[in-house]
Amino acid sequence: MFFAGTTTDDNVWVTGVLVVITPIAVALVLLPFALAPMGVLLARLHERLDGDMGRAQLCDGSDHGPRHP
Image (cartoon, rainbow, N blue to C red):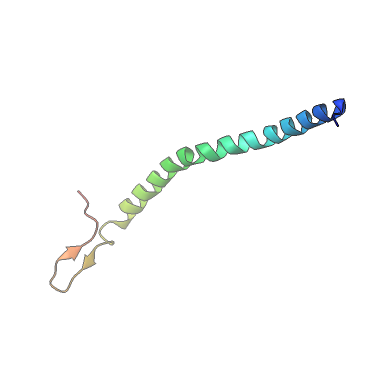
């Protein structure tokens, strides 16, 4: 059976849910774009502070590891 008050209550509930969920969904979609520059900065800082410490020395004297130009 259809009641006139039910539709209004449902609309208010749906609107409330959308008001709560929409900003969270948008934030989750944009989060990688906000965190990516920070990850790049941390990686560059780590590389800069690491210097040649990340290179492994082999028994024959050659080394294998990240190459720094």
